[in-house]
Length: 122
Image (cartoon, rainbow, N blue to C red; front, side, top):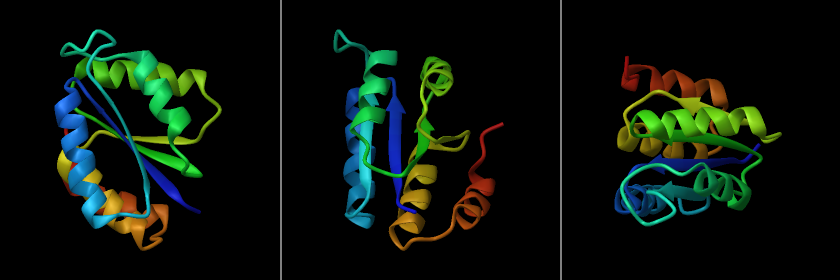
């Protein structure tokens, strides 16, 4: 099973920055991002998230987000897609980095999720 990573942020710069960081540690993973609104502003876009999911070549997707409407739009997309997407309520940078490094070496999902437990945002 090959996992892909999805980063959803209110800021296109944050999304791109997280991708750049984790790409260094996991160069073989499909990492796609959805950052900002369709107008290039701070915010979240369901359409951008859909495009990032469509562009991701992972068999299943591990999804990470930053704030409220990013989570809300991601959850709406989960209801609309047939893709298997695992959403994590963890610190964005640390969670995505941890998952990516483990997925890069073909760790099982249970191992990835066990390592994300301490990064959970309540």
